[in-house]
Amino acid sequence: MLFNSFSFLLFFPIVVAIYYLAPHKWRSLILLIASSYFYMAFVPKYILILFFLIATDFFLAKQIEKNQGEKRKILLFVSILANLGTLFVFKYFNFFSDNVGALARLIHWNYSLPILSIVLPLGLSFHVFQSLSYVIEVYRGKYRAENNLLTYALYVMFFPQLVAGPIERPYNLLPQLKQEQKFGLQNLKAGLERMLWGFFKKIVIADNLAAYVDQAYLYPQGYSGLILLTATFFFAIQLYCDFSGYSDIAIGGAQVLGIKLIENFNYPYLSRSMAEYWRRWHMSLSNWLRDYLYYPLVFSIKAHVRTRLYLALFITMVLIGLWHGADWTFVAFGALHGFYMVFGQITQKSRQWIVRKVGFLKFPRLYHFWQTLLTFSLACIGFVFFRAATLGDAGYILIHSFNGLIGFFGRFVGVTTSLNQATTPALFGFLNQFLLDGEGRRQFLFLIFLVLFFVLAEAVSYSKTLNLFSVKYRWVRAVLYFSAVLAIMNLGVTHEIPFIYFQF
Image 1 (tube, rainbow, N blue to C red):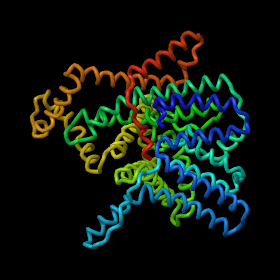
Image 2: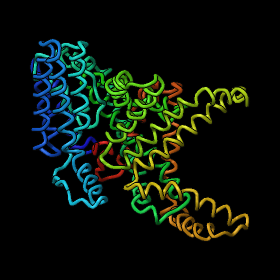
Image 3: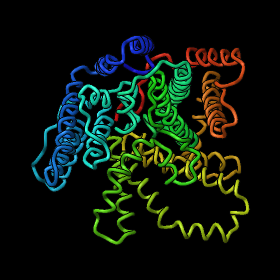
Image 4: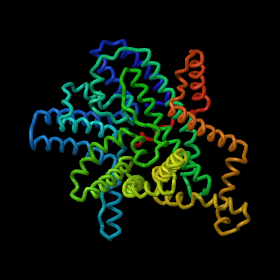
């Protein structure tokens, strides 16, 4: 069941009504049944995998708490093996099998592994990480093992964040699931406002941009210049609005039920460095990998302190890429961000010295703008690997993105080169399709308007100068609510497009 579906618009208010009308002792069961129904609306049989992991980790966590010494480590290892093993089979086995086969053919070895005809269960990467977080915290002695299987099952399966996070921690979500949540108009109002903004970002902004992006990335060899640059820029906005829109709906939906989920985004495109960017983008994943992978790697790698830090950082970023998908494009995405992070650490003092010597600090606003622009541009380069179907496509897009632009300016200054002759037709084909044709022009200008509206809305929200949904007069708020709903109904994409992060 997609958030952006008519089914969810019926499902959610019914669940909320039953939840608040029922006695507290029945509410966890009601939410668990609702969450099971929500998940089974996708592929019903895969809920058995979820139940298996829930039962395994619930039992192992209790045993970890009861035992001491080496046995606790063995039990933790079994939990990690069960979770990551399940994830490997469904998400990475075919990728591994393909590459083993390719390597065997390269060395003329007649060997191959089978290809499994299976589909990745929805949200498995999120379930595994959230469940492992609980077991690891119990192992570290920072959280007591849960005695109620139903409560723990709801911790893993809570439907607002079941499919694509945020990846919760036990000390935030579990206590709230045990508390009796009182119905409150403030929670209802704030939660619905958050959901409405999430729906707007997804259906109106992200899904409209998707049509342009999909066309360019489906066959990038057919385009050059502005169309590839614009498609990559649009994808950055699409991805953010798609994923943060999902998070807004999840967080808002949970708030309506009286439960506060952790935040997942904090204006990442306003970051002034890649390190800051990853502290602001998909924060629940970044923090998870920091606490459960990066720090343990730093202390386990036997090397010089700086070498340990850099190596642990690079490995963590590569695994962030691989977490997103079983493909070399995602490995390249993670490796590129690993390079960004390590290079930024190594050159930090040198760059600060250059900034002081050149005098950039005399113009702090201009310097901050440059840092933000550079960070966003580096993120967009990474998004090329994230979105491209193959490494070849990603390479083509990166190499040829500026060709049409060069040809365009060369034509106007009277410089004719083989590059101009090759790229100018592609550029003017783009102009003809998206700017000169009446319908294309209207659609393209509409997308530009959406992007500008998004940028303005983010800037206003970040500056904390105005919250449109909190204006003083009720009639103004009513007009805003009505306008947002009207925009979703009339400007949004009418067919249901899955959220991008559902595939992970």
